[in-house]
Each structure stands twice: as structure tokens, then as C-alpha cells.
Image (cartoon, rainbow, N blue to C red; front, side, top):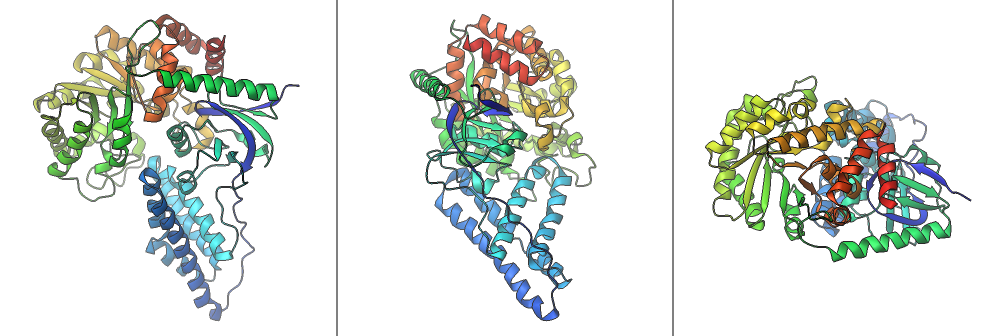
Length: 554
């Protein structure tokens, strides 16, 4: 008897079977209570105490973990401890609202502000929802929403996951992740790749899954098999074991079965990621995000501060390539010293390279710092500009890069216009790098923070693959390498397709490289081109993925 199959977007490869455990439910708001004047002081004190308790709990969690998880939880603690939030809660109570509704309404106001800001800030809405729910639960003495603890390993199913929960996921207990909302660039997707957990997001029908039900999650195909047969579970486990052994046996530079080279690189952001990135079996860094130096401050970092930070990265990757992306401010990363606060549509405004037109010195200082830090480091430093739209911008950027003594200048292909005129970009640059996350967002006019639009952001979309193909073919005509540094590069099956389209390097999270290396080693370049043709000819992302996976399994 064939089991039911639920479909979503596979964002982390692999498969796992187990019993479902759902996230603890969100506390239900009681009916509003009328307060007397005498009730107000106690209600204010209780609400403020609830916020303090949630902040203290998050700080305790942050102290118990390390790295990115600690940073996420510390940021959460600061958000709920914000005096402006507790002041708003008190004002609402004094206006007649009970504590639970005052907390909910105050968070709602902050939530609306983030949602309207779009981009990175809109992605933090889930954080606020989680903090709201925890604060209300603390006030009403209800069970705290969060990760389940059924006493055995389980498949975690949720409407969505908040950073406070995802930061504490234990891969020894959580076998796989399934969420109703989210997309390929969501926090859940990125964390699943980092932890090596099979994951499917954007699966509306996951709401039908109940605690204790048996499922087989296929993060490669984006499928959840409900009540799978013992044979199906056994076969999936055997495939996983084969994949694990094959991955462990392969090391070194990426290449196809017939020896065609494909550079495998890592993505790097905050400084706490450096040790793991440098230790990875990679040929360098394909995307060094420099924004972490600029965020959460009211003025740009000094040249000295930048030099010290960049030099640490270059030294760690001595003998390997490091592709530095210059400041990508604007839209989801507004900065008071680089972007305007009153742009009506920041995603289509002054962002990325365009910020250099507002303050040329920002870019000049950064390029000088990169050049200074690279001297004597032993790293092969390349520099690329984000959000390039036309060849003129690429040419001007390349000229500025070379004026600082840096030898390799590139342009990111994140705007459809750049893909359509990639020949012009490649003529004036030394390399191109495709950012699939933004390229998908702009190609489909789909805000990547809106879960309901996740299908348009699926990197298997044939239209997106067409744009990548255009950029890769333009690079080949001009004898320029073309890499992919978006989330698409982390999917082993899609990586094969990308190579078939002409991509010469892939940059992903360190934990994803072994799977990508294995997938490439099992296919010749001609195989990759054949699979790319299948994906391009498909009518939609789901069909493209399904047909390619079926072909590779045969």
C-alpha cells in the first residue's frame, strides 16, 4: 500500500525516518480583563517581570552554547529587554488593557515596523512572534512554547521555527525538520544545512501531521512520506549510509567523474564562523560577507579596524582564494551612514554598489583596507561588487579595485539585467558570481521574507536556471570564471545541474561541501549537461527537481 506523500521545498539534502513531535502550541490569549485603578500597579509589575524572566532565560541559554547560537540568543534577549518595549506595555496597561493583551499589542507595533521595513528586518518578525508568545506564557504561568521532549529522537514539525529554538536543536535528538512556512533562504533552511539535518520547508499540508505519526523525510526531493513501509525506511537508510561513506571517502578539489574541475568554496560571514570555515576541506572562500563589521553601529568602521578583521581571514586562508564582497548595505541591511531612512521601496533603492554614489569614501576606504590586509597574507584575494545592474557600473568598480593594486575585480549577478547583459559585465571584469537568493527575488518579483511566495524562490525554478545559464555562457565566451554563491550551491543535485549550465565554482556552508563533492564525482561533465537540459525544459521547479532526481537514481 502506497503511503501518502506531502510536498514542500527541500532545503537540506538527505533523508530520515521517525515519529513526529510538534512544537509546543502557542499560548491562547484569554478574554480581555477589565482592570480597576487599584489593579494597575500589580499588573504593570507582573508584565515587566514576565519580560525580564524571558530575557533572563534567553541569556542563560546563550551562556550554555557557543558561536552563532549564542549570538542569536543574546540578540533575542536584548530585543525582549528593550526598555521601549516594556514602556509601551506599561502605557497600554495604564490605558486599561490587561497585561497579556498589552504585551501582545506592544509586540504587534514593533512587528508591524519590522514587516514594513522589509528584507532582513521582515525576516525577524518570527523572532518577535516567539518572544511575544514566551512573554505571554511567562505572565500567565502557562507552558513555555518551544521544542518538544518526547524522550526519544524525533522528526520536528512546526508552523515555523524561531531562532531561540533553532539555536538549541540537538542533532542527536532531532532527526529531520519540517515546517509549514519558510523558504530556501529562511533561518530554518540555513540552520538545517549547518547541522546536516534533512529538511523540508514551505509544506502547508504539514499541519495535518500529528504527534507520534510515522514519517520519512526526504530533504533532497522535498517530500514527506506518511506511514512509510518498513521496506521504504530500510532502503532510505541504506542510501543514506552509502552517501555518508562515499562522502567520507572523497577529499580535495571538486571535480566531475571525468576530471572536469569545479572549485568548491565556503561562504563566510561573522568572525565566529572563521575557524570552522578555515578548517573545511575547501579551496577557499567564495563569498566573504563584510557587512558584519558595519551592522548595528552609527558610523562606518575605521580603516584600521577593517584591516585587522580582513587580515585575520586572509591569513587563515593563506594559499587559498578569498572572494571579498564589498559592503552590501541597503534594503534588508540599512545603515544610517550609508542609506536613506525614507526610501519608500528600499529593495529597489540605493543598495549594494549604489551606496558608493552617496558616499564614495565608504568604498574607497574599504578597498584600501582590503589591499593593505592582503599584502603578505598569502591569500589570493578577489574583490566583487554586490547589486551590479549594468556594465558601466562593473567597469567603474573594476577600475577602482585595480587602482588599489588588487588584481581581480568581479561583479555579482543578482539583478536580471546583469544576467541579460552578462557579456558586457564579463568583458570589463575578471569574474562573475551569481547570488541566487536575490536573483530569484528580483526575477519573480517575490519578497523572500514572505512564506506564501516560497515556491517562486525555489532555486530549481527553470527561469532562474535560464538566467544562471546566460551568465555562465557569457563568462565562457569571455574566458571568465562564473561561480554561484547563493543557497542553490549547497544542494548536491542542483550543484550538478549548475555545473552543466557552465558554472565553474560553487560556494556553500562548510557542512554542505562533502555532499556536493560526492554528487559531482559521480557524474561526468556530459552527464551534468544532460541533467541541466532536463531541468531547463521543465515547466516548474517541482518538476525540474523530480525529473533530475529520477534520472540520477536510474
